[in-house]
Length: 267
Image (cartoon, rainbow, N blue to C red; front, side, top):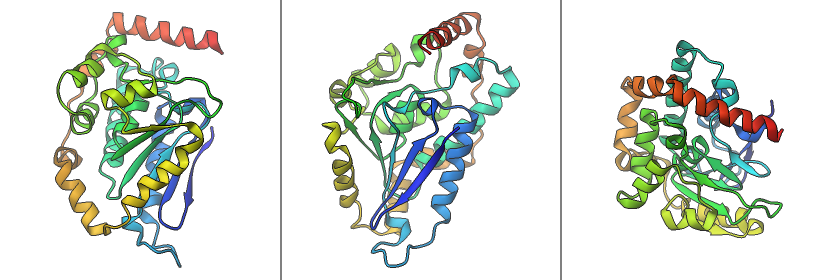
């Protein structure tokens, strides 16, 4: 397993997801992300840097052809209900921490962001993406859960609700399980801006610069006002029985198994 690397710059902090296996979201990913969020919260104001830490944007990006390929189905398929229930609680905790981080957050989408990977991007305040991977190959984004017969956990529904405009486009994204190339993702609201891969870093830092005029106190309060349900959910138990029931249904298990077998054949 790789790491999540924090890179501190003068006015912002980069968070590089370098966990391997296309940054698939499993227990190890969530543990590493939780630790990273704790580190970001504990960092003091950097000496000689212009901005107090609380007002410094966080830029989150992946590695190679993947931002995050979504749930680690290979691992999760082996879980019994008790283990899966614990995973869903951990997922809720970590993704809620990302969505309520009291600093501006920018998802810098460098490659595939499918299902949980798209949710990871949506949990950020702004989403910018490359038009292709660093090697020039195509990639996709989308909420694929419905395609394998799953509703979404409560936290995912909450993130989608505050991050995507309501209406037909949101219904299409959630209910069809469609996957979108970057320009199409821009059109439906999954991305806010798209540029050539060679320009992605400069675009992301340009966006980060626009956030540096505020103060940490103002940013924290504004995010609480813009996403009240997510903040209130920090102290509310979530009921994800419907998700768990669907996960362990024979039809969904069959579909997940088919996906895992397909991934294994690709190597």
